[in-house]
Image 1 (cartoon, helix red, strand yellow):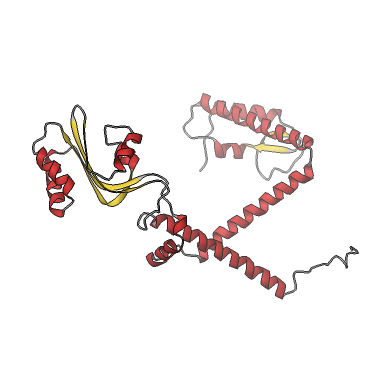
Image 2 (image 1 turned 180 degrees about the horizontal axis):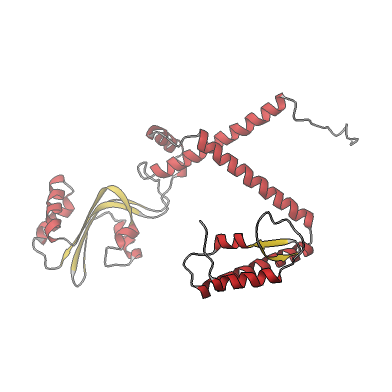
Length: 292
């Protein structure tokens, strides 16, 4: 997409072009704007980064800043090249970084082409059971049921009986009651939630909530407007064994990473073995080099 340059901006570009060096140089069809020691900034390159919709004044300001920044960065780079203490070490670091980038991109391409991330539930479960020590809870978690109702709601005696019962019938009654009278209702006997998630719904600080929740007992709290009923069926403290259902995603990611590492190691082993088989690798012992 081509960008239109305002008349005011063109004046700025022409000023820079007029003041730039007129030494003969092959610009490959591009229009030079400014030059420093044979390094050119071209009008076409500036157009490619010029934002759309700028006013003439803003466009001119952008061009001036861009050219000034380009010049400053180039001059600083040239100065740094002249003054770095160990050019060979820097060149080696750059080369090492270049090699690492090339290898990384190649490895990612190989993984994308040849290694699927489809992992069965059985594989995940087997990995979890074989590496239980890797899966530990890093924050307190609970299972349970929570309901929040207005302080003067009707049927509170029933709520107090139902939320402690844990029977399907009681849960059904609570769900029906919550539709007409509850401000908040959450059934999580079948999944783990963090203590901080639940504490955020209670009228007490998080650290105080944790001390209460770890007792695994029905809890009733109130403030000036609401009653809070919470039944805690299970509690996991930090450092406890992470349950299998909670560790599924983490186990899957670990298994994917492990398969990728094994796959890449096999690629390297195959390359090494083929190079050895074809005599591409030569070893020189110390005796041949005249060393003791």
